[in-house]
Length: 453
Ligand code: TYD
Ligand code: MG
Image (cartoon, rainbow, N blue to C red; front, side, top):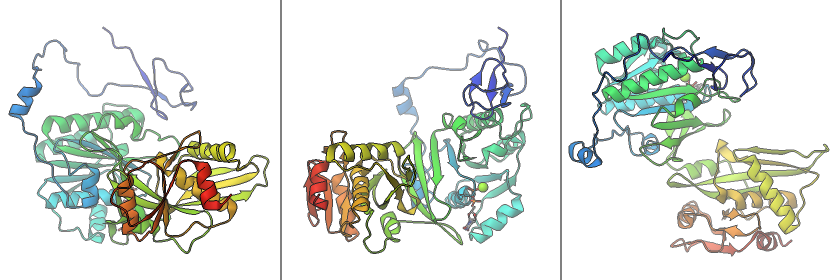
């Protein structure tokens, strides 16, 4: 059968069956290009090669004990990986340009090479001498990592074939190009083809590959999104430019829990691990101010305390502003609606700003009650007690639902010197009895109890 041509939008990655000037999916102009094949040479007859052989699960378990994982010794990284690096796995590390991906991966490469993995770090962005300079700055110049500065994928695969490494880091996938594909490096077809070649090579030869991908703020142009489904593990490296904290978050992991985070701090000598993130996130907290609430959250397998900050002010505009950093805007709108219709506290005519301190991003519904506390405290201009943590989910009826792992959250709060917690009724506080607990049924009770409204 003749191959029907397909066309891909370089902006959003949508696949079309005919060319057009404008992509229907994202609305961009002149971004659609014809796809060319993934690799050179004539296509093999798919029926001629009967090497594939079926296996049962019991065959597998009897014959193949999985090779052991390697720990880098960077505990925060190992935890996010689900307990070390799995041999022959493919990883994607995405993040904004300049956030510290190259720094992290150079440190990881050195750590793994010191643990005996033969490691090659391929930079498509910097010359080997520059990578060396960075390594010197990080105090890693004596690590047995091989450095290469290369963007032609064929040369990289040839090197991998000859050197037989166990771990290859490609920094970044957007700079790689295959000579069989007409479009420019960084385009969707190049990124996809390069990622495909590298991940299938990795699986075939038992090499672990780490692909670095830049994410752009708006539409992830030809970015990691098109690669996510090809790899086993997707990690995002996030943080705010103005803050020194960096969070490595697993958003997909075939070999461990997703949503696990590792916390790092960017210093003059590279990234250092933060073993007690709660203390770090709360370190900038001053004396109690209206609009501030401490949320006891769970990130992956760990409790993490963060400060939520709200500001509520009369709006000069006809349409009040709702701005959120680090949380979900739709969820904020929901909390405001519940406060308004169930508790009779209007926010009309008021601008609302919500910020998660320290550049942290949270997605747990358990943050609802802490958000409501911060909003009310800001609106009433009355500070919450400084030694109190808050958590719990709010339902549309205004009822409070207990959060999972109540006991872990309370223990962490106790460890950090908090004396009280406001929580939904029904959670299992377990052994954290040192805290004085206010256990509430619904949001109206919360408003009455805490603010006397
Ligand atoms: P980099 O790893 O190059 O980011 P990415 O690969 O994600 O684009 O890190 C860039 C930033 O990190 C840069 O602004 C300088 C800062 N940095 C430090 O603060 N300390 C260091 O030791 C290093 C190597 C970088
Ligand atoms: Mg970089």
